[in-house]
Image (cartoon, rainbow, N blue to C red; front, side, top):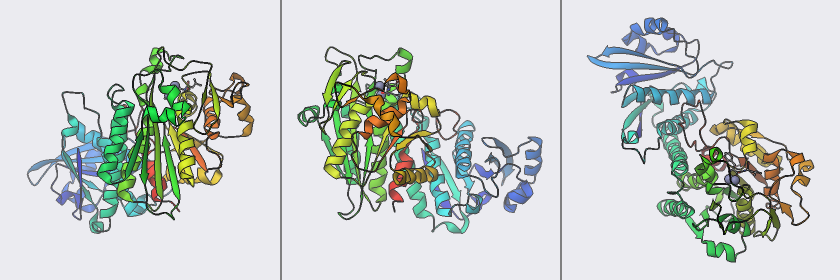
Length: 499
Ligand code: BES
Ligand code: ZN
Ligand code: ZN
């Protein structure tokens, strides 16, 4: 647990066990570290030199000393090289992650952190504070619900030394905290074992968020889903003993405001169904509801931050399991919008449940913009690896919006082409569309996006394939093994900065 407060004091006069400063590569103790620090700790320059600490990215240096008869630690964390005159916010975020890991290692529970000048990053001071708060919360997260040790219970207080900006940045601090909590809520849902997080449990969680933050939430049962003709969601859930759910949350600001629809894939466990996955590919398939976790958790923040757009969230949730009742390769199903699909591979189930959810959002809300997040394809994971989410859209202006939100939030995306040349890949003589692409067309992430496109009509729409970015991302100091909460920051940024 982390507790953030603002202070106008200098780091060395704040009451803390450690004083933390972020430095860029090639910094000089005398020129770049405030005089109050190196005047009080004349050994700092010598120690930095002796340890050959340069300020490179993802490195740190701890110097311990006596201050007012107390042992304190000065923690310098590197942000790497400046690009021109500036460091990137991402290098700062990673330095903050490193700071939390260092605090854990040294068991430090109170830290005073000198916030760098906004001019270091070409950003406003408010933005720097907001990102500081979000990132510190993200770095602090851990999933210890099932372990005897509960490190998440350790309270760590961090004083953000912001000089004369204390009143100005209060709002930015609380916004940043709300975003960080939303990211961590998504991670908690994703990290929860699949037998503990069934579609019904996920739906209950959404209902409790809605109740707590005063927005509306409706959950459709499997019976209702079947009656309404959502053949995709029903077919995927057929092999499971758990009922599927369609979770709908609404934040309404005004009838005149534009409406943004957020759709998230909620497969609480993906075994592949009768087209069973090999054991190793199934190991982390509790992550297959990361899209749903992201959109539900984004709603938690949206309800608190009150953007000027209406936001509706639709998350289809089901388990994909084999059984005597499961959908079979060769089955033909009918979706909510009346289209039919041949199910050639039951492991391509995400697009089947999303087809119904997209159709539902289009029909009931006629949104001005729609975005879906899904751990949709192994192909996307192979194409981009763990650091960039795959983005697909036929609307350049919609894609541009997402690129802007990606850049400012830190959830990076990379756009793939959606040329109609790929479209014949999902043709079949027996139904309107087929759920896997013909082998000659390769491009599995793109053909999956084309499948979804058949259900969005004329709505400006963006699809984010988070198969690579949602889980087990290596080498990022503010993540841990397990869920990352990919997309939550991006979604909140997108609706908060809507123009
Ligand atoms: N949930 C998987 C995709 C996935 C893979 C997510 C790895 C996260 C990490 C999806 O349902 C799936 O199995 N897709 C198949 C589609 C194929 C059968 C056309 C895939 O990518 O192999
Ligand atoms: Zn699958
Ligand atoms: Zn899946």
